[in-house]
Length: 281
Image (tube, rainbow, N blue to C red; front, side, top):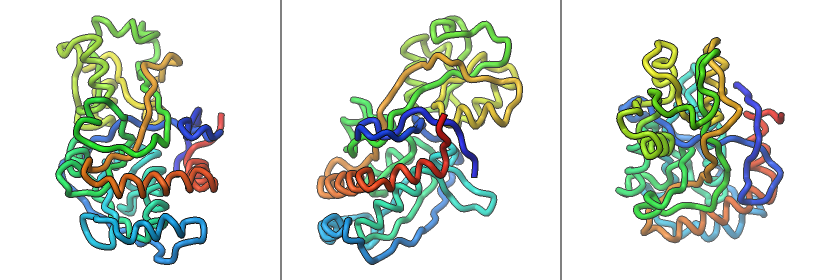
């Protein structure tokens, strides 16, 4: 399990926990489903949440189906054994336990994960999803559970030292993410290349096909650590709030997930999950 340095997590809750959430995930177009068993017995702390969940309408009875994109460590990633792990995965598992449900994880492209909750094919989407006005028009969101940073990856020796220096450069991003949206808004579509996932964008940077990559800080640090000759600029591109995406019509689930999140923040569970994957600076 890899660890990275952290800055801020749970900013919305006012808790002193650090993390850097990712904006979005992208990966293989094929969908891989895995099921993670949840404890049926609710703790005393979760009794009210679990009881309220008894009447929840979910895609599959007794299960909480999570759509994700497992290509963005440390939030969601696939192990050598083929299991999906990470901060978002363990957070979803803890929520499912509080709701008395079994967690099922469906791995897919980021865009597909967003659509899956809109179309009622998944109950929740967790993939470092940024809350935007455009997304709020078609999805419901939980309370924010993380504050993330969009960072810029460049080669060592690059003349790019700040977001303003991206003008006139070719910028790699992940398709469908806020990084892509920000860059196209700021520099025009002709300056931005959209890739299926962050790893492919970084490979393009290594190959000289783009001058920089804009992506969330957490995976950015992972990619830089694995690719000597690259660095993350100290100046960030943007800061964002992240939340769990759900279907707009399932207000009962939104309320239940928010109640579970509140308990996980209050009892320290969420912080302990973050501490497994992210080290303090």
